[in-house]
Image: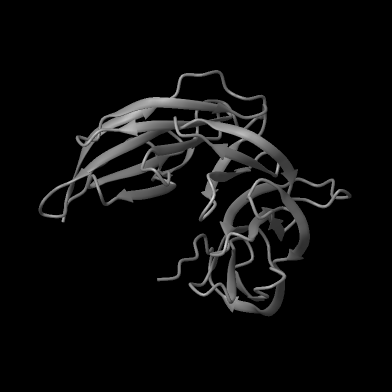
Length: 264
């Protein structure tokens, strides 16, 4: 229908704002959020770009701002994870698509904020740090700010190899959280407290492949499919709704350089 070209590599995350008819894109290599308006004919046009000038983190991958995720909060603010600056930004968005910074959460140096998910019923978010393989439990305030309540590793204590956090998902009932580890090649499973404020590690299961970049739960949360990018295979697990734990079903589903799993 039409296209809008941006400098740098393709976007690594895209979100659609149905209410305001906007599209938000995370431009990792350029380090910015690209905002587009959806036109009446279904095409898009550029509205603005948001770039973060703050000091970057100490990790070698934090050479400048690296926006890895941008989406809407439950109260329709724009939230942005910047791996390069170790920050999570929250914006108020006007009907015309223009954004105003509402709050900034500063993670510990070297965290590398990658993705974030919200609890389905509580004002709590779970921030996955790619560079230090941790999940931070964040209380979400009415003014758009975050407050850290807990930080927990996604790796076993005896693991000393290199790892990068990848995907994070929460069960529909808000009782269990799942993250994938690229390097340890596993999915970490956490039980969530009833108020959403605490995580307890309950399982760390092999993905039976290399570099699990993404995974997804199906709509009923009975199954989990994981994409192992470097070994070209999908792994299928069943999920126990009561315990949250995963059990391997199949590991030999061929999928060349798979990077995303999506259930319609």
